[in-house]
Amino acid sequence: MTKKIVIVEDDQRLSDLLREKLTRFQFDVVCHDGSSDLLFLIEKESPSLILLDVNLPSFDGFYWCNQIRLKTTCPILFISARDSNQDQVRALENGGDDYITKPFATELLVAKVRSHLRRSYGAYAETKEQAIICEELILYKKKLLVEFKQERSPLSYKEANLLELVMSSYPEVVDRKKILATLWDESEFIDENTLSVNVTRVRKQLNSIKAPHQIIAVRGVGYRLKVGEP
Picture 1 (cartoon, rainbow, N blue to C red):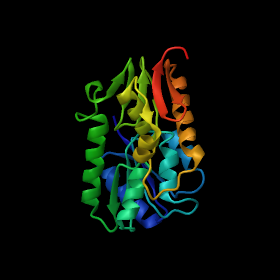
Picture 2: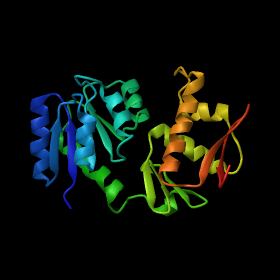
Picture 3: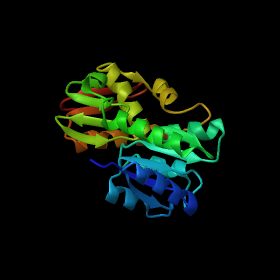
């Protein structure tokens, strides 16, 4: 089946060049300039992979990557002239899978695209044996997916990390400080509600797949996973 790739790039010349190159390799390519209706396009097209620039007209690529991760678990490859380590770290922290600096050889880009597609959908795709399993709840960490009895829900990068912590420690409590240290860099400012917001999001994802698993707050300590009625 032909894989669909969405290119999010406001440089029309580069966008057209990449579309032409990828089309030669039998990919179905859709281009977007990064304007405010990007999420609508992603939901409509359901791409197999996204190429995402950092400097975009409405919001930057880091913001869009974080939002896209709430909609899809497909590979996201950043393409940007910004080559600092900090930018590359931000890209990965917001859910990106790779970072390619401009200028780049289109042959390299195509090779990376094909590699990520193989790993996500081909022979190297993650299996259940490589996943984290807890009482029939399955977390596919690399794919940012959670599954219960064949019902699946996408996760953001931080949601997946949080769920991994409580699943791996089940039924023990995970210390709040350990959760904060795992999910956020020391340089990031975290207010009192930030962790609670992320816990609430994971709870909604578990509820959406009808999993009986609950993340329970243990006052003064942290959180733990519980299975069954509260």
